Image (tube, rainbow, N blue to C red):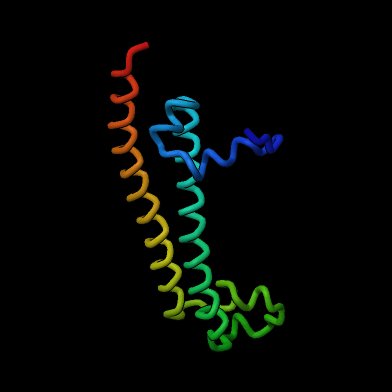
Length: 125
């Protein structure tokens, strides 16, 4: 068996099933890895929404309250969109997408936990 030092535990995240991970490391570690996976998925959705929103903000027309913006970073944020512009609806839609995705995945995780908890508690000591 090869040893990889401090990071030797990481292979289990990718090569073991949930059942094998729970049997070998316990339910706490399985739940922890599920939380980490949830965070990665949610971050990916946030990045995608950000990639969609940046061009929308960058192509906003110059308004009286955005005339002095010269910073390229600020020009791809909501600061570049004038008040009352319809482009701000995209921000609301992106927020609904992110929060909806998060709440749906939280529901799936609770359903998963409900089943796995009873399987874990049924096992003999």
